[in-house]
Length: 394
Image 1 (cartoon, helix red, strand yellow):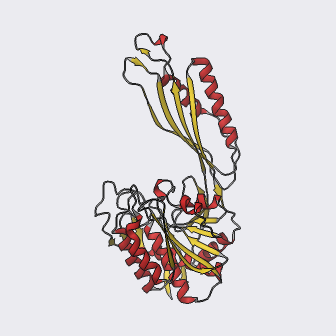
Image 2 (image 1 turned 180 degrees about the vertical axis):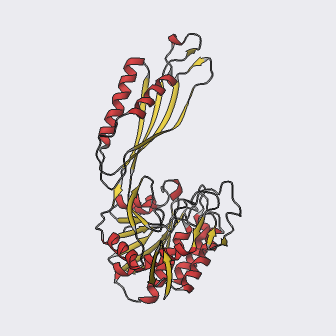
Image 3 (image 1 turned 60 degrees about the vertical axis):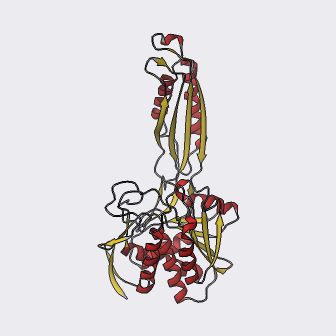
């Protein structure tokens, strides 16, 4: 028993055991020390560490490689229903510039562990591991199945990771994806996306006689302004989400300043909240396309990728169990949604109740130089996960 100040709330609490937490930090240091930057990922390089960690908690291990070296690790304990999984990933983004220490040499300073992957997402594997070990130490009998995964390729759209695992039949009732949100906020829904590539074609001619050609760049600019100014405020969506966003993120075209270009292209990213009618949006986009083509003679080809949003009910047994655990620990846990993507989206679309959580203290150090995880938060996260397991499986 110990006292702690958690997010401004003073309460007597039972955190996971010191010995288990220190053991999990040791595992984290080993994981950070092995470079799994994606690309190429090479998550299989972590095999011995993951194998030992899972053996330590009595889990069976299955390794599924989508491609050589792109390993997905699945640890399984128990059998039957209900089933709950922890779904962190083991690939990281590149280190980048601006580090004060070697990004692949873990350093602890003032209660924070620095290193690439410390909070996104190798630290989350170890907090999940610590939660499971603590749970098993206290409860040698329980109903259902616990899965601890270490997935590949999340930083590059999950084709070789979560998507591959689902195609191979992985399924469970509930999943905690420890890869987003904050220590005091869970995410139960993520916006979808409309990714639009616009290809503008015209007729090339000399810059001195532009009237003899059709300027693909100018037509593209006209179209982009239409999209930027397109009314969307009347499109309704679920109250848990913020509104539709849009941004023009790439644009290219032309060969020389004295040559009217015959081709240009741009890419637009729109984030779509749950409940919004994508058909209304695409209909308006196509109307603007036809207007520009009719008035300025050029042609457009639109290539669209639509990613559907997801939302887990706030009354899900998983969400209620997690919020109850947070209350037990004196944490004022917020519930929200976000515009980004995690593996939760794929799992949710496959019929799994999901929630997303992270030990992030709000510093947003993931993907940045000098990425770190606050060890107090890592221990608290593990304690919350352990308590949630008790509420689901006992």
